Structures are given as C-alpha cells and as structure tokens.
Length: 213
Image (cartoon, helix red, strand yellow):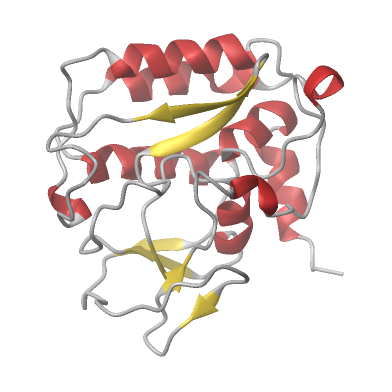
C-alpha cells in the first residue's frame, strides 16, 4: 500500500493500514496545506485542538515532501509536547508513553519526513503493528482524489479522503471513552494518540486484529 505521510495520523488511517502487509510513504508527493502531513488533531478541554508543524517556505508551496524543511523559529516542539501532556495527563495510559513522547519532541530533525517516520515507528511499536515499512521505488504522479470511500488506482496509490477540515465525518470502527467525553461528547477520528492514551496499545492491537464482522 502506498500512502501519504501522516503526523500521528487520524484513527481511520491506522484502521486502514493495520492489517496491511507492506506500507510505503510517497516521498515524491507534493506538500499540501490542507492535509495531515504536518498537522494532527487532539482533544482538549475546550474541544478539538490542531497542532501544526511549521515548515520553511510556507504552506502554499508544492515542493515534494521529501524536501520540506522544518522551521524552528518558534518553539513548536515544546508547545506540542506541552499540549499533549495537558490534554492527556489524566488519560489511563498516558504515563506509559510519556517518556517516549518527550524523547520524540526533544529530537531536532531537519527534514519533515524524518520526524514523521520517527512518529510512525513510535505508533507502530506501541500498537504492535506488523506491517513492513518499505521504500517506494517508483513515484506515483497521477492519482484521482475522492471525497467518499477510499479508492486505489492501478498503481496502488491510496488517497486518504479525510482532511483536517472534515475528519470528524468519518466514523471509526471501535469507539472508546475519551478524556473529555462527559463534557464535549465523543469526537470521531482524532489523532491516533487520543486512542492510544485512552485505551492503550495492547487493546488497540487486539481490536484491530479481530476479523471484521
């Protein structure tokens, strides 16, 4: 399966890739501002919270994602780490992952893809993912985007239809109890971190490994 990079991607993305045998991130894909390539959505006491990784050159560029450089003129790493801690300090399983999260955000990467790959490896390990992450040998340039349901073209390029402006429209397979659900109600398809901190990697692995009904 060939996919775009995700910054701690939404839960639907993890549901999609969990039982894949191989996964390949498209490093030649152009950076797009309305995507989860450098943005994730977590849940705060005030509601959904967008966390965005700043990049050099701004959001309007169409540079291949492999060439996108992270901007460090603002302390975004400390801000993201603090936001995650504030939002999930009372989550049942957050303490088990806190040290690894701190380590991720303490490492200064030059290229966006390098940081995203570190985030992906953290999630894969945490939920016991068995897919193999492979290099893409042939870039895929022409892909038809869809607005409903996933579509795979003849070269196996999977486009994810959810974006930061419509992620809540996609129902997840296994609803769970969220930290602020009693006051904010359930918010679907947040970053995988929300599910991980609330349910734990072992439970996520168990649920996603079960055959679909």
